Length: 228
Image (cartoon, rainbow, N blue to C red; front, side):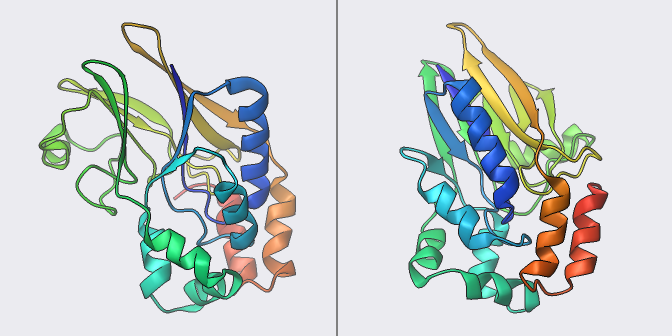
C-alpha cells in the first residue's frame, strides 16, 4: 500500500498543480490524504480549492486556518472568503479532525493537521519529548503524519514515528520547493520519503500583486523568504 500525504497549500494553486502532476506521474498512490490549511495566505484560494475538491477519493482533515477563515475577521480572511463560494465555506467547515488508514493489523497511520490533540500546537522537530508526549496521549497508531510547521522531518519518540509532511504552498525550511510525502507499507514496515517539487516561485510572488492581495508586497516577501 502506498499513501500520499500533503498539507498546507495555503491558496498556492501553482505549487499545488506541480505537486499533483508529480503525484499522478510518479507516485501511483492507493490513497491521498490532505492535511489541512488549504486556502488562507495565498493569492489563488478558489483555484486551489477547486483542484483539491476535484481529487477523486481523496481524504481531508481540517487545518487551523480552514477553521479560522469561517470565523475570523481581518484583511487576509476577508480576501479569502471573498474568493470562495458559500458551498466552499460549508465544505471547509465540515472537514474532519483526523483520518486513519490501516495497512495491516497493528500498522495504522493517523493523519492530523498539527498534532493529535488540537489544530494549533506545533510538533517542532526539536521539541522536547517531555512536551511532545502529552500531545500524543491516547494515540494507538504507530505513525502520525501532520503538517502545520512547514518543515519536513521524520522523528521517532517511544513507539511512535512522527512525520511532518511540510508544506505545498508556503515552505519554511529555506528551500522554495513544494513538498509531499509517500508512505509505502512493504508488508512489515512503513517506508517514508519526502519529495521536493519545483514550481514557478516568481509567478506566485507576482500573483499577490496581480490579484490585489492585501499587503501584497509584504506577503510576497514573506513567501519568498521561505523561513520563519
